[in-house]
Amino acid sequence: MTDKKAELKYYERLNIPIMTIGSIKELIKENITNTLIAWEHGIDIDKQPFHIIGPAGVGKTQICKQMCNELTISLRELQLPSFGPEKTFDEIMIKSPVITRDDIIIPFPVIDNGNTSFKMLYSDFVPMMKDSFGIFVIDECSRGDHTLQQLMWQVQNESKIHMQDFPKGWFVISIDNPDDQEYTMDYLEDAAGLRRQLHIYTDVNVPDFIKHAKEAKFHPSIIEFIQTHPNYLYDFQAQKVGSVYANPASYERVSNILWGYHYSGGIKNKLNNIENLVSGLLNTSKTRLFMDFLRDMKDISPVDVFYNYHKVRKEIEKVIKEENNAKLGELITGFLTFLSTELPDYGKQEKANVVELLTSVPIDTSALFITQIDTFDRSGPEFKYITKLHYAMLKEFPRYKTEFYDKAVKLGRGGN
Image (cartoon, rainbow, N blue to C red; front, top):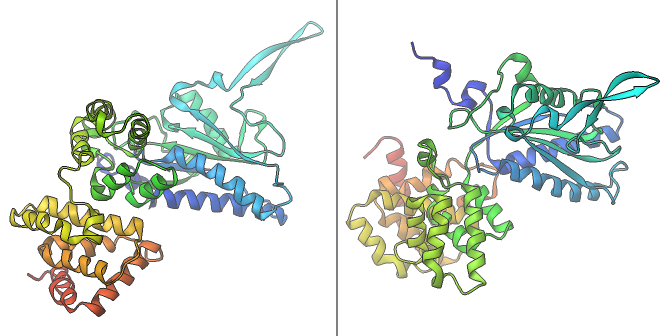
């Protein structure tokens, strides 16, 4: 008989929320800040340990570093008495698969008047400085051996190791890859293990990646490539079969390679070298697509669709004539990704270009524009931007309503 529990996704089995990596970062920062403020008002609430679960390379460890930097700034601005202008919010990260319990705590003999006793020696992994603040991150928590996990359970539950309490200002976050992917895990899902932490699942999110890529100054070609091909951000199929696979972390490394060539002779002169290097990060299949994009050979840029539709009209008409629905779907998805991540200013011509695209592509494909908008956070800037653009086009272009919107609504209701 099939084990129904084993068929469930990790987040389904735990029955926990799914959030974007950016939302998780803001939520945890807010929780830490609220806890510190409550303490300042004499309310000694417990610290909340968090457990972030999500695909490898999606940015889980990265947001921990970002949180520390951002909390340092925001807490100084709050001018809390306990967090003066000289304070920093620090990070200690341990990598569970490569350390043991003895790397953190070990007994050593002490001889006093001929009697031998033992005291505990704590490593640099243990925060000890009084009145300090920070996040203790347990990376790949479930891949540590059992003795390390037992020690980490004490950290998560009691904010201490053996008899050594963490400074009050230190918070705990553990990170895991989901066990429905190709990972080795040893996580005990008993009631005691689950109650220690607040569990949140994160998945791949293109807008979050684009936002981070801009802030971290990724090479512009990476940003444009993912805006054009959002489905290429994470190669789940390659990961599943054990191949090198594209993911947000690997694109950051590709960006580093591109910047290196950008300032030392130019990218166009070193395409073969770049291809060989990138193949080891994205795999050869995805690299071939990226190199075609880099050579400006095949792709219809969302930027051109928005600002210079006349420049790409013939290419779009060609794809429509060929009935290449996969490429048309990619075009619509990429165009919406561009709009929702750039939020570009628009005038009458730009609105006309959007109308031209959506009314030219067959409705069963262009309707993706509507269905994907429906996944946006209603309170977020992306949804507000697209909604404002939608109402403007409805008002100014009757063709948009009759040839696109009405047809999309009818299709959504099961009409032909």
